Image (cartoon, rainbow, N blue to C red):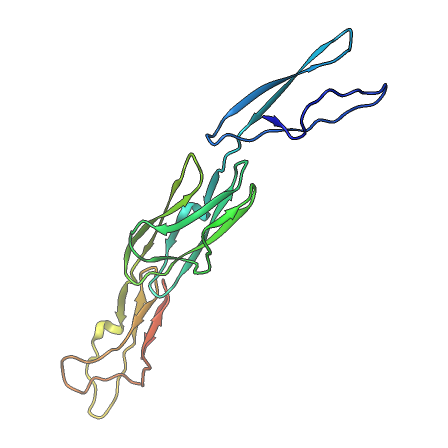
Length: 239
């Protein structure tokens, strides 16, 4: 504690006043609560001394993180992507500097929005929004941890876990009449329908259907353009 304008003997006329300015400089160690007492001595016969009690505390920077949907991306298929938002908020009494945002090194299938400029200084109440995207190229469980480094004295490093999964498509088929064409007269054509079913939770991509054995008498009845895409839970009839 200290005074900006020095204290000196002042004569105060009846009904008047004199202003003195006090200041508080927060100590380097935080958090801290400080008190001080200033005594005013005057010619007031009833109260020749008056004690003025001062109190102040050092504010601290703090951050709070909120990950959309708890950081759970759910099922995201290969070739698709999903983005969730990470919010970093300054909840302390003083500005906080967010210095680094990085992945700990998990599945390697997550990415951060490329437009983050760090360090980012957040005033109390301000927030920083960070887009986190899962765009898998492989099947299986996906997980990682976002590591945030800041000037938060209590938590200079904050870990935010994220997870998702990439499920495979599932192929099953139904061939009319069990694939039995029966007796077919010479130069006559008989057709059976082949139905492809996707029993999985991600799109099924059929790149080709070729004959690998048997006489050339068997062939598709029409030209099929590949690749074929069968949505999850859907079916596709191949003539």
